[in-house]
Every structure is written in C-alpha cells, then in structure tokens.
Amino acid sequence: MNNYAIIVAGGSGIRMKSDIPKQFIEICGKPILMHTLENFKAYDPEMEIVLVLPQQQKDFWIELCHKHHFNLTYTLVSGGKTRFHSVQNGLSATHGNGLVFIHDGVRPLVSHATIRQCAQQASVCGNAIPVIPVHESVRQTSENGSQMIDRSRLSLVQTPQVFDTNIIKQAYEQPYDEQFTDDASVLERMGHTICMVPGNRENIKVTEPFDLIVAEALLRNKPL
Amino acid sequence: MNNYAIIVAGGSGIRMKSDIPKQFIEICGKPILMHTLENFKAYDPEMEIVLVLPQQQKDFWIELCHKHHFNLTYTLVSGGKTRFHSVQNGLSATHGNGLVFIHDGVRPLVSHATIRQCAQQASVCGNAIPVIPVHESVRQTSENGSQMIDRSRLSLVQTPQVFDTNIIKQAYEQPYDEQFTDDASVLERMGHTICMVPGNRENIKVTEPFDLIVAEALLRNKPL
Image (tube, rainbow over all chains, first blue to last red; front, side):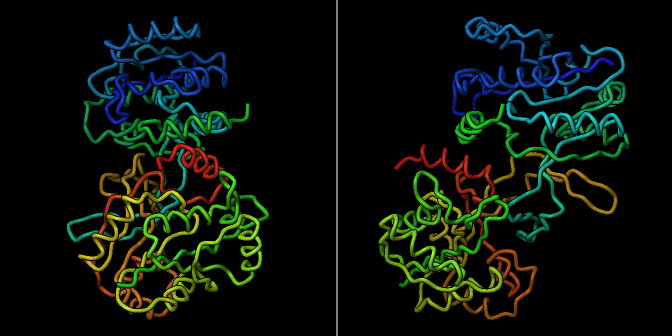
C-alpha cells in the first residue's frame, strides 16, 4: 500500500490583507504550511507527502524552509490554474494502490482522529470526507427573498478528503468544470456516493485575519 | 423612542461539559454574560436592558454580580419553558415605540458596527438580522444520500435580531411552534420579509469548550 498526502497550497494573501500568501504566514512562530505538513508526518511517518505550490512561490518557500530548519521529506509539485489543476498535478506524483489524502495547506489543525476515521472509511467505501454540523441558524436566498432552512440536514465539509488512489485518478481525468468546488464533487460527477465521517471543529481553514487569531489560540491549546 | 436590548440566557452547561450554565463561565476573568451586557451598555448607555434568566439561576447570578462588583442597571425577568417563551417574557417588560434588540447572552463579541447596522436597517424595514457568509463547502443530506449545495446562497444567522417593538410583540402573540428557531422565524410566520445585514465573524455563540478558547482569544485581541 502506498498512501499519499497531497497538500494543496495555492492561496494568495488577499483576503488575509497580507503581503505574503496565507499559507506562509506564521502562527506560533512557524508558517502555517509547516504545521500542516508536520501534522500529517506525525500522523503517519510512512505516508508520502506531495506538496503542491504555485511555481512562483517555490523559491520563497525554500527560503522559509532554510530559515526554519524545516527538513521534512516530501515531493514538491507545481500548482495549476485552479485548485482542480493543482490536484491533478499532485495526483500525477502518486503511484500504486493505496489511499490519497487531499488536504488544504491552510488547515493545520486537523486531528489525527479525523484523519484516521477518513482513512478507515475510505478503505471500505473508496472515499471519505470529514464534516461537522452547523451550529447557527441558516437562511437560503432565492428570487423570493430568503428562507430559513433546516440546519440539521446540513454539514460543513472539511479536508482531508480521502480516496482510493485509482478511483480518484480516474475521476480527475474528467474535463474541468467550475462546479467542482472540492475533490468529492469531482468524484460525485462520476456517480459515486460520498461517505461522510465526523471531522473536528478545530480543523478550520485559515483564510482571514480572524482565523489567524483562532488558529493561534487553538494551536497553543492543542493536546500533544 | 424607547430602545431595549433583551438578552436571553437560558443555557445549561451540558454541551460545555461544565457544572455551571455556559453563560456564567468566565472568560478573561468575567462571566460571559457580563461581557455581553457590558457590550450593549457600551454601544448605547441609553438603551434599556432586559435580562432573561431561568428562575432557578437567578440567585447564582446575583451572587456572581456581587463577586464581580457588577453594577450595571437592567431589568431581570424569568425565562420560560423554551426560548420562545423566554423572549415573550422579555417583551412583556418593554414599553412604548422603538426598537427591540433580541440577543443571545452567550454572544459577547458582537461588534458595535453590527448592532448599528441592524438598528439602521430595522428603522427602515421594521426588522433586521445580522448574517455572515459560509466559508466551507456545504452538503445537504436527503433520502438519496447527500448533495453539495451552493454555499453562496447560504447565510449563517447571528443576533441581535432587531425589530420594531410593536411588530415583534404582535408576532409573539402567535401560539408557540417548535419550528420557531429564532425571532426572525416568528416574524416571518406573519408574512413579513426578513432584512439581512452583514454581521461580524467574531460574533460567535459560545456553546462548546472549543468556543471558549476562541472567545477568549478574540476578546484579548478586541480593539477597544
């Protein structure tokens, strides 16, 4: 079995109001992306890691690695025009049978329990995605204004989205469609049923200054 | 104009895994509920505050007020069987024309900009609720499994939900229905259109240990 984590980091710093791309912003003294990579390596030191970065960010990243004495082993792959194309590039660096864990570079706080449950479920179903319930009331807008909708039927989707390697590679041979908002939606287009497992609330996507404050607080409180 | 803030605090400590009700848990050295009350008083010292608390929690609350030298002026009202009945009790303590700001006791971090925008919109429309966009992919479960839904059409609803006093009092004369999940849904049942204004992401509802960590970090970072 060859298991791979494909860590996708294609962000800019725009929403973060930052000069540097969000995945390179430091929390607790280290770029977010390093926390994410180390988290996966800690989960399973045998897992091969593929990091997908925009071509123009590679030099800066390598500089950061020197600065932080970051010497984890991984394969570095260039990103594409969209997230879809970046994942395609990441998948092309995988080989053999096993599972692929496709994960956002700016989600440093996924728990090992979440990763483990995704892995177990994907071994059975061929895929698994972590989800959490919605805690707030939800309204949906339409041409007729907005309506309350039943939040108990909604789930917020996180990563890693975990797949049988051969199945997800086949799914990513489809032509790009802008309605592919995550990896599960690419697989779903082929008629597969998506399996959901419980995620963890700490597993936030760090995209705004608000998230930086939250991520820093959560990392400090993280049980080892 | 008589403006009122009705602060509803009916929670237990169950989801918080705490012996004391969540609204009394301390963050930054003070019960959450005190932060919330002070926040409204700071927004507008002229606003009258009605605090709705379960009858059996009143003594403990008064003890906490002594301990923390909390001497803000407000009207204390007993809660009812459900949130709907608690708000009814709160509304019965309001008089005259003006606006009512109905707010969760465990949302200490609503910004003054959010309150102000709700007030302005409610002055025009008769109601306003603060909402924020959904940042994650969303799936909806049905009998046929789960489907991705368009998150750009979804909004997460916060409080304060702000209303013309006379209109909301009339709405709360309707018989209770368990489908009333918030105050807007009570008004909506009468055929009113709900007006949405931008909320602030910091305005979280503190219900789980996760939220305590986040709220504490956000309060420490809060601009004065």
